[in-house]
Length: 272
Image 1 (cartoon, rainbow, N blue to C red):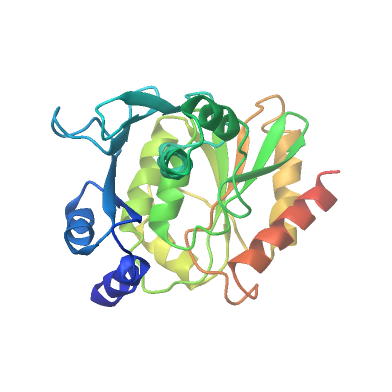
Image 2 (cartoon, rainbow, N blue to C red):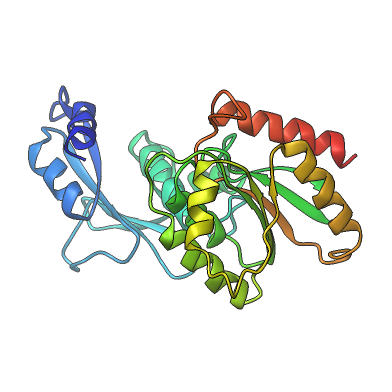
C-alpha cells in the first residue's frame, strides 16, 4: 500500500498554485491535499462535511452531482439520468464533471454531455442485446471488490459470469455478497470460468446454499450452456448478463483486455 500511495503522489509532485488537485474527502485524500501545491478541490460520495466548505462536490441520494464553488455558489454538474450503471461509476463521472467545470464548461453543458456518456471498454461496458437480454463486459474487474461493485450497480435481475486466476486476494467478502444477492433473488444465476481464483472463491461459498455452480474450462462452452438456459430457463426474464470476473485473466487469456475483447466477440458469435 505504501508503494501504491507513493506512486499516486507523483500525480501532483510538479503542480503549482495555478493547478488543481482533486482529492476525495477521506484519510488518503487529506494526506494528498496537505502536500500538493495546487488548489484543492474536494469530492465526496455524500453531502459536504461542513456547511462552510467550498470547492467541494458531492452526490445526493438521487445520484445527482453538485459543486459548491469558491464564491459559495452551488451548481448541478451531473444529472441523475445516466447511461452508465452503478454508484461507483457515478462517482467517477462526478470527478469528470469537476474537471469540465474547471476547464470552463458550463454546468448545463456538462450535464448534457455526461448524460450521453456510455462508459469505456471493459468497465461495465454495455455492448450487446439479444432477445431482451443485455450483455455487459466488466473484464477490468480483476479483484473481488470490483465484482461486488458490479453486483451492486444494477437494480434489475442479473446473471453473473465470473472466475479466473487468483492474485492473492481474499474472496470471502464476494462469497458473502453472492449469497446475499441470491437470497434477494437479484442474482438469478452464476457461471464460473476455471482457475485458481475460482477454486478459492468456491472454498468460501456456502455449500448448503450453493449446491451446484457450473465451472467451465473455456468461455465457448460457458456461453453455449448460457444460451440454452436463456432460451428455456430464463426465457422472457429480460435480465442483465454481467461478465465481471473478480480475478485475473492469466491462463486462458493474455490479459484482461484480451479477455474482454474475446468475450465480446464470442457473445456476438454465439448470440446471433
